[in-house]
Image: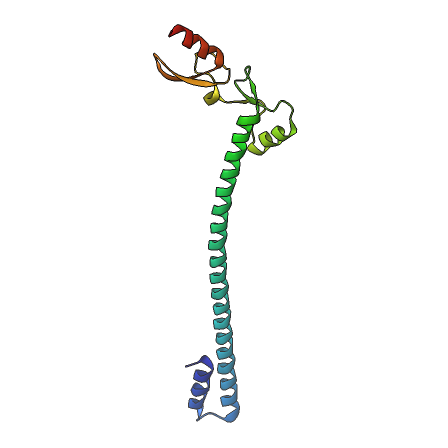
Length: 158
């Protein structure tokens, strides 16, 4: 039963009152019922809007996850390009831009310093900061070495 109908039925119980009093009470009840209906409608509208916003948030989260995946793919590709085309600095034991604007942009996008030390790409001979070029089995296990150390190990194992 609606709030308005309840108000009308309640006003019918005021039969012993004068018509002005009955009219005043009926008006108060009807106004209260209308206000309650407006509150219910407003609540329904807010709940509908909240549900729509929750759906939008879930969709945005899915899009954000997809964007994060794409960013990681692009980051990996950019790192690969820097490793392939970047200049090696023996002093830094890592990559540098060599003043090339495309590499400078890549370093900036990756938030890397120039030069960028890269210990995992260095020769594994103690103290060497040259770029590793070849891997080979050694008495100490498989090692990645620069050309110079590769030749020294190769000569020593002959």
